[in-house]
Amino acid sequence: MPPPRHTRPKFVLFGASMTEYSFSQGGWGAGLANIYCRKADIVLRGFRGWNTRRAIEEMKKIFPEDAEEQPDLVVVFFGANDAAFAMPSGQGQHVPLSEFEDNLCRIATYLQGLSDKTRVILTTPPPIYEAARLEYGRQKYGEQAANYLDRSNERAGKYAAACRSAAQKVGAGNIDLWTSIQQQPNWFTTCLTDGMHLSSKGSSVMLNELLNVLKYSSWGLYFATMPEDFSEPSIYSYIHPSFEECDEALRIAT
Image (cartoon, rainbow, N blue to C red; front, side, top):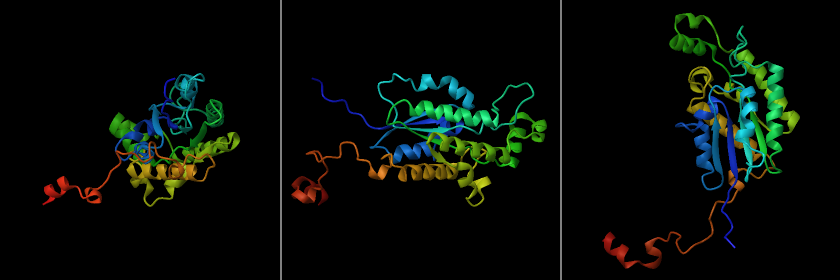
């Protein structure tokens, strides 16, 4: 009989650009991976530009129902793109508010149904600093773009409220990033890079909020209460030379 396979809990980060970029230097995903380095595997499934419609189209490919191992936790982070202004052509990232909330419920319900152990956290979009979004548009698309906002903080707040509502409806955890970032001093410059995406400071806010959800849940997924992999004593465990009066180490030191 083969020996039992080594496994550990799996956390999947599922979202748009704020998730895709979360493993960059100072990113919240990288910070989470560091904290859980011997306790859980952190799997990145971030796709810049996605909204909840695209997430629903693709989620069964990313999270197949017949997978051998299902995640213990999925952090869902959509909304900044859904809250973009609607285009007259109907193209673009915008998803109407009521549909956005319904989409989040559908995503969370599907993920929760993958296994009895799978937990879900829904994350609100961050706030929007509109002056920086106008400047971003000017730099990327020219002077004419400086006359048009692609997003507004008021709209982001409505989508954040819809996310909170969806989490309550389906019994998922919730990170209210829209609120928590705006509680930081000078949040519009310290927490955001282009009026929307997270700086290292914004990522630290996101990480702290995520850890708080895990800490105060009953899921048993908070790092401080989880065992480390292979923490049992071994003959290969470190021993300082002084403990056994190691002559070789003493000769080198002298």
